[in-house]
Amino acid sequence: MAVGLGVNDFIACCGSTKFAEQMVADGPFDTYDKAVVAAKNIWFNKVDVHGWLEAFAAHPQIGQNPSSAANKSSTSVQWSKGEQSTALATATDSSLQELYEWNSQYKQKFGFVFLICASGRSTPEILAELKRRFSNRPIVEFEIAAQEQMKITELRLQKLFSNVDVTKAEGGHLTAPSIPTRVRPPITTHVLDIARGCPAGGIEVLLEMYTSQKSGPVFGQSGDDMWTFQGSSATDKDGRSGQLMKIVNELTPGVYRISFNTGKYNPDGFFPFVSIVFEVKASQKMEHFHVPLLLSPFSFSTYRGS
Image 1 (cartoon, rainbow, N blue to C red):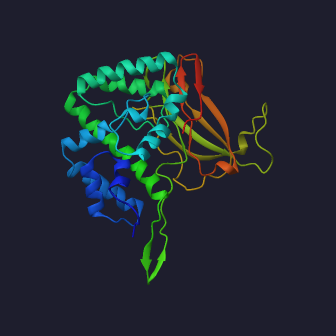
Image 2: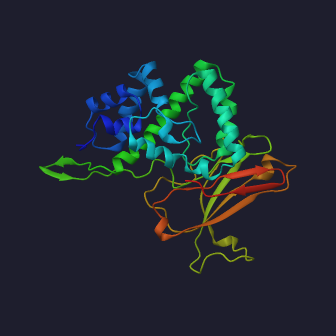
Image 3: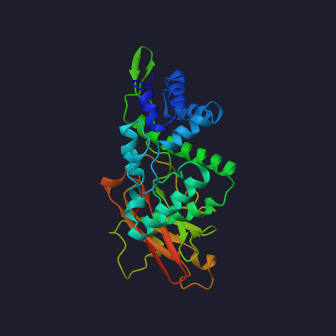
């Protein structure tokens, strides 16, 4: 039985009053997974157009102060700040101005703010997606925005369930159920083609871990036989790779290498492939590591997202 989840709790996850009230009516939920199933059914089948627009209005424009939105929840304001942290960390004055201008054009065309699950996404990536979606017909974009809202709701439900006392009765005793602390693999990536100003789809991605009993890899020494395969995938039309590893609560500390087959994507480019090596310390095993690649024919850059 879930304890202490009321309308205000679910409002923080999704700004639709109808959604929050129906979640309370359908609850309590003894697991996060059951809450997500109910949330999807309510959002797509029971909340009307007015409820969707109410939820959209609870979000600030990307790059703006979250408290500027028509938000009923201080918790939601704090979560918005965290979700936009990567975008703000990768923004410049000029990119923020461009984002503001495109946000204004978008709202004028569609009647609501540009909505995207911003967690772990850079400002260049968000701008590219905004420009791509701007050409959509309103009915198409309305549905996409609703799907993005559901992604945000799922992430926030995970935060909600990880911070409340969730218990269930078994044989007269109260025991805590197993609630996943992650909704995605601990290591993720995406690739943005900054020369074209769009996501880079179809790039092969390989994730490996350094497994030698000796100290970590040393600059200037290949040690290729010391790397163990973790998973592989290819980026989709949004530039995001598929699942590179299992969804685990605790990421094994160590040194990881993520490689991109950039030569196949752009045979005329300077890089036949790009490898990024990074270390996960024991104190970071519960964190999420998002390692994006900003790519052009003759340069690349990366950073740690969230």
